[in-house]
Image (tube, rainbow over all chains, first blue to last red; front, side, top):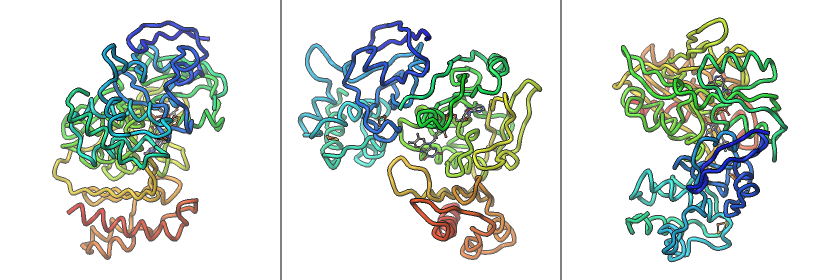
Length: 155
Length: 269
Ligand SMILES: Cc1cc2nc3c(=O)[nH]c(=O)nc-3n(C[C@H](O)[C@H](O)[C@H](O)COP(=O)(O)OP(=O)(O)OC[C@H]3O[C@@H](n4cnc5c(N)ncnc54)[C@H](O)[C@@H]3O)c2cc1C
Ligand code: FES
Ligand code: FES
């Protein structure tokens, strides 16, 4: 067992974990934050995407130990007292989800993308979300949602 | 999938990493971005007893330019290499290739040193550095070595790195006006090249055409002797030894190598 100090959604925590504990399992099972899904478990689908020090990462391929000393933001961390985060709101408005399984990862990847590029073109959104697979929507509404959130200027 | 148990130690400096590696002995492995090693550990294709994390050593980060050479710290991420103004200006082929690795999340974690040390013949950065005629610096208990990239790739996923040695930096010439081209042929999102071609100032390197990244020597020689692009590209696959897999058989890979070399050279003018 080893100790990890990770700031999760703005709150500093210290936990004793196995060195082999994956960040996604730390978030789900130790922190009880279950928005972050495991889809492929092979670094492909992006459903486990969270922000690590503000950059999108696939938490099925990061050790909790590697995140020690750093900040992690999950979908739960986007919640605001005044309602949904602008990217979440845009996904709702534009019907950017169907079953919703990919959505937490998709939203986090989009938040990461917009932090780097506040006004992406359609192509830049598609390339920026290359690491996130959706089996339902066919992507059009997801792209529309991300562009709507960007032009809303609040993301 | 959960890796077999191991101990994790984080190195504070290169000296610290070398000491930790020698203490841990044969079953230790260096961990950088973990985007090749952790997937292998999850599949239990690798089961090191100790991981020595070098990714947070400050000296292994960043890009510097000095006397016509760009030096990139081994733990610099693909995203940082792709975004670096120095790399974009002085070695645009490398910045471009780094921007094509996997997907944004993978580029936020994977490192240039990890990519070269892993030596996947299908990977992007090994061929980019090979086409640029770069070099790497390694540091071990016996001191530092500078290894030209032409001597670095030793076999299938094998390099000239000795046990316990840390790759600390990657060097490429700074040549803002070199003609370059890069062609990556892939079928799926965030995938490796089925075949890749990097061309820079008369050097041509091929991905996924042999057990290591390889140079297209016959095509390079044809160019040097004044052959046109068509004629040079026609010999791009000479001397290579491509394999068959799910995506392509060897014969198709040979065709791709010739076509992509032509495209890379046309783009490079
Ligand atoms: C889904 C997926 C898609 C990918 N697609 C691509 C792609 O399109 N193109 C591509 O090029 N790559 C691709 N990759 C691989 C990715 O680029 C890896 O990040 C990279 O190959 C390894 O870098 P790393 O820092 O993650 O190394 P790690 O996984 O940490 O380490 C890899 C190996 O190198 C050794 N090592 C690492 N750093 C050092 C060092 N400083 N000194 C000595 N040894 C060291 C480790 O011990 C290990 O053996 C993909 C990976 C995944 C998971
Ligand atoms: S579960 Fe992590 S990428 Fe699919
Ligand atoms: S909404 Fe079902 S996978 Fe994307």
